[in-house]
Length: 414
Ligand SMILES: Cc1cc2nc3c(=O)[nH]c(=O)nc-3n(C[C@H](O)[C@H](O)[C@H](O)COP(=O)(O)OP(=O)(O)OC[C@H]3O[C@@H](n4cnc5c(N)ncnc54)[C@H](O)[C@@H]3O)c2cc1C
Image (cartoon, rainbow, N blue to C red; front, top):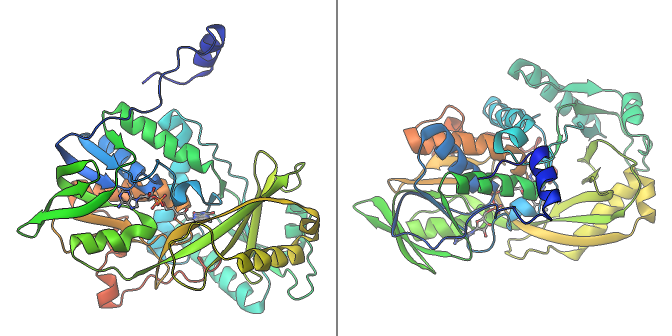
């Protein structure tokens, strides 16, 4: 893999950019791999990357039915934060946020991490109590967040309307090292690094069956033929239920469409991320100038990548209350992704009833921020059988009633 650098850009400029090589290979699958990862989203690719980097396991195939990063990883609103309430969540999301800080250097690929600050508005007394409690919990967990006053909110976001018609802004939970990153670049950066280690990323190849012998996984059936493996990681977000069925077990998940939209590009007007959970809308401004707006989940299970129209109306109405200038924006694009929601709004990173088969799913509306930490923990779990980062997030917790309730932290789609 050629190193990306200012020198390389200058060199290629002088020779009309003829020397760049493809960022990753597109090989045909081999007969057998040590590890197969199903799903080339951020979590699948990060798991493969840390298996190679941290454990030297590089005979890996990442199998993707569409194109890499084309699932939720390329469809999200890119918010990164770690201000969760429960200890296992804070540890996992803070690990991820920390890795994001120098991910561009680690991958030699600019993921455009922008720690511009994330603000969660409190607009009811109940939210004040909830967020102040989270700020205290975060202090104990070593996660840097603070409770800020409405005056400080206004200083940080001059375009905000503090005196909304229904819900005034009463303060906010502020994480100054939260922010955003370029979602495609995260997938592309991991993919390039995986390919450079000799791993095969096989796109346009759907896994259609999971093969097992004596209670242990031995391979998968795909649209490009059968492939053998010793270990299997199923990391397919909204399609996790289908994969689990192929492997012979069920998951406590539902698949729902979650949507987002962006406006036309405008001049810089907001340099932080603002989330308004009570009125249910959140927004940030992309480097191109578009206002990136997150909407809600459909009220019924589906596999569309669009989402229902009434959500756009509700989301925009909520934002106009908080940011009246939004009423003058033209919206450019709208889309949806199929998210995988658990009852306690926390992910599943776990062994499964099938030997050698692991699952990483349930990130629901908020897994982009977790990609590096999840990949780190999942790789450790798959390589060694145990990871302190993932141990609370097992499938068994749903049988044993050990829920990791993050319904407040994950209350608004993000
Ligand atoms: C509109 C929207 C906004 C969001 N905003 C945020 C946000 O601001 N911050 C945040 O942290 N999170 C956000 N999220 C959530 C985040 O995008 C996801 O949690 C995360 O991207 C999940 O990554 P993944 O790798 O698990 O799944 P994906 O990126 O969906 O990857 C799974 C891959 O598996 C593939 N696949 C499925 N079935 C098969 C099969 N049978 N064979 C082979 N391949 C298969 C799919 O094609 C897909 O590419 C948002 C999500 C949406 C939809």
